[in-house]
Length: 369
Image (tube, rainbow, N blue to C red; front, side, top):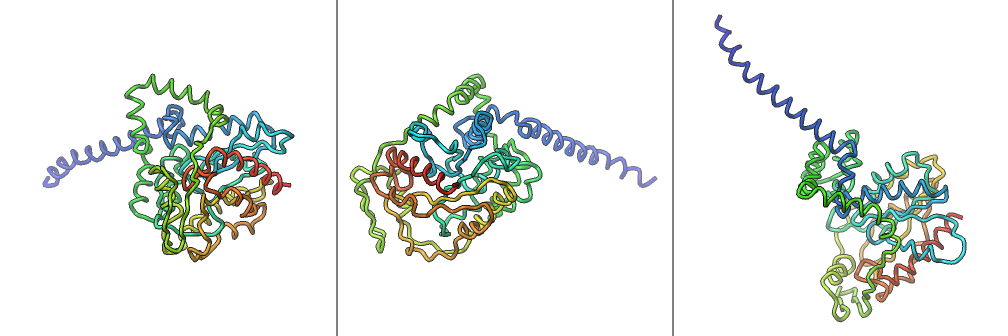
């Protein structure tokens, strides 16, 4: 008889535990229904990181339906942009249909998740072309592995099965926790976008529909700024910079962060990152007829000297030893490394992109033949 009060008292505790478990299951079910089925991806702000990623994916999947088996697709950040219009208006036959799947702010980890859903059979393209800053590995103060932006770009494409590998791909424990919580409850990643959507759903739907219809034309007709870095000079021993007259904050900041920065300690982190993520991409295409091509992008308006930093490795050259992997001549675009062809310290301007586009097609034709 003495045990009766204890048993009776434990019932509310059990009910509380069961209620909490039921609430957790309900939250996970609702989160999965809205954010894991592709339902909400159709309403994303097209100018958000996730929206741009999804819009690029939809556009390229649609292009696959229109084009034959001559497609070559390029991947990169905002530094790897070329003009489809310039190539389309070029006289003469084109050996390949070139497509641009670059997304500003992305890296090889993001491209892996984009490619996985863009080409699930690993046989849809003649070649995949990756634009990289260098064939040698130069570590910077920021650890690329801890760039949490990939969670926002690829969140709609991440699966339950990605949870462990994706979370462990970050070195920092805070980034790991953010990645894990975002994968478990995707709504936490979408929170800001959802709030903006709910503030005016009709406006968002009209905006998304307009973007879907205009995206291809926007990419085809895009004209980069004509701004020039003419007059830029860097004294490399002292890292003293002479800026063009009237240089704005973006131009100054990009020169200092991308070119005129002092050497950072070389730890091998970038090499490990590139071996891991480019390695995973190459593994998907093992046995496929698709070629994997790397190119070194124009290094800047005033190229940073190779001997400024003692680089410990060259992960891209290592990967080139694999079957079906091709390295373009690293000097193929050296003629573009002039101040008058750049809009800031990192990005080609309008004339630079036009020249780059023609050289790019020539190089792709050459290496694939």
